Length: 355
Ligand SMILES: *Cc1c(COP(=O)(O)O)cnc(C)c1O
Image 1 (cartoon, rainbow, N blue to C red):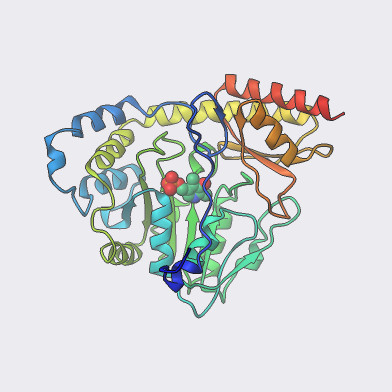
Image 2 (cartoon, protein in one colour; image 1 turned 45 degrees about the horizontal axis):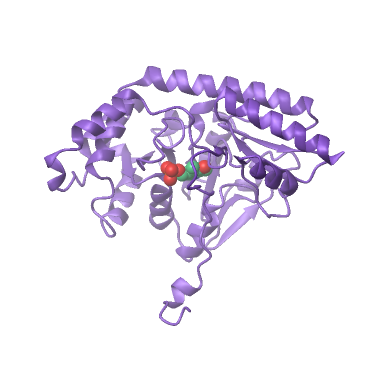
């Protein structure tokens, strides 16, 4: 019954997150979590922060974490905004940078939260079709629109665009904000952070959820021109002054003090990814070139939905969307080598049973 729901609430179609099962025994390749633990430095910092200090509110400015992020990315703290996961940061960006007069552009196949944010904030949008190989038609994102939102690498395809392409988007939309969601950039794409000082309309959003194994801590951040960051603070401080708690602030700063760990983990996942892609191709799958920690795969002789259900029966979760353009595809998170062995074994059994 929605009797007491506001008209706004009644009109919403929320984002559907991937399943978080109660049983721990499943092999979980459905939400792009990192199979490796967070840096010991992060865990140590969280333990140290879990004390009587929790009596006090956290720093609403997150000054120390922003200074650490600024140092890591060669920026000033005024160019850094932090939030409770990058989903929240993206939501603040939609409110801070976009208006209803002109549509925002994003690809037809991309992170399915973008249309949800646009609908929540009453912003019109246009979904530009990717080509048949899921490549971005750059020329269709130039000028005259109310903003551009691009995930690089893209989700769920895993395809990345070059720094030159991001530069072209920022230069080609001088009157609109270009938002680059780099949730997966550490797994092999080129980051646009070096362009931040150059383009006053460019915002780069990253997260600690994927490459830094901290999905449970909820830390995301935006990097951009000081004036854009001021708009984000304006929106945030009109909603919740304390979006990051003391444990998150401490853990995130701890993780940033361990760049070597990030490098080791992301390189390991990239090598598992590339090996798994080769194996899937040998089994007859077409696998999109991925610069992320997941694979996007289709098999000419098997229904993706049947494979999804078959894998589930074998205790393996992957992701599938009932969307006409990608209904034949599975998105498979890259886990440990052992998990990917189990996945390949299960898929080859399912394919044999189909014949
Ligand atoms: C996972 C993901 C996010 C959100 O991550 P948070 O956990 O909210 O930081 C944002 N964008 C894309 C494309 C993602 O896949």
